[in-house]
Amino acid sequence: MEEGRIQASGCCSTEGGEEMIEGNRVLRKDIPMTKIFFESTQWNIITEGDGWSVETVAGIPELQWNGYIDLAGYTREERTWFSGTPWLQEGGNHSASGFTFFNRWDFITNSPIQNTKPMFDGAFYSVPSFIGSDEEPESVIWGMQRTLAPSLDTSQIITTDRNLFGMGAATATDRLYCYSRIPLNLGGPIGSSLIIPPAAFIVPGTVKGEEDLVYMERLRRSFELQQTPDVDV
Image (cartoon, rainbow, N blue to C red; front, side, top):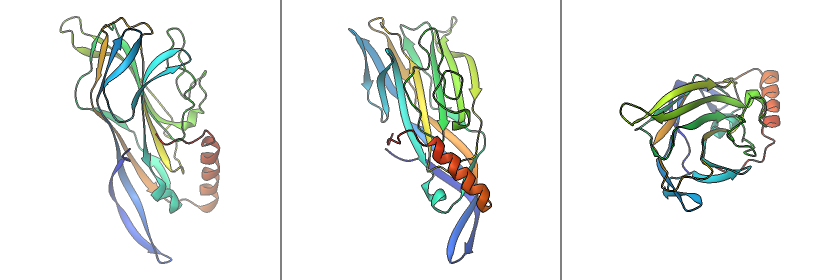
């Protein structure tokens, strides 16, 4: 899977014979489009998109996408990533049939999520960083939840509700983990379909050095948060 793209604007200096790069960056991680369809007894991905899958989480089917942005070049130089305010760009509209509405979560973390609980099981939410989830609050850098439903006037899919979450904590980890989650109807109905447009996480931020003691403490905390097994996504 491709890593996140990086646009840079900063300064270069030489210290101890090594080139150090600090300054502002804009990171990007693309999410491909995909289409799913309910056939017989299960959801199937019709249009294969890199990173997309339908997973059953505690009995609930969920459309999932996993990716990451590589920060290893910064951590090797003992530099810290300070995130600005990320956002999500989309290259088209959602399309759905057989849904009265559906929820979508997109979020960025500094450690892998546990993925043992569905985002929403029809009665209870389990959103990373909130009570009921397995993740620490500071592990989520940015997140957005949307409720999408057909418009009564045009039948196009529109956003009826939106919530933002995340702490934007600085990190000394090697990766930023990017996720999309859409809980699905357990029983279809047969013929239900969902088209997800291509999208991209845009993550502005700053690469900067810190005093040794501050950096070592941040590195220690990043290590603690990383104790979830790190699987390439």
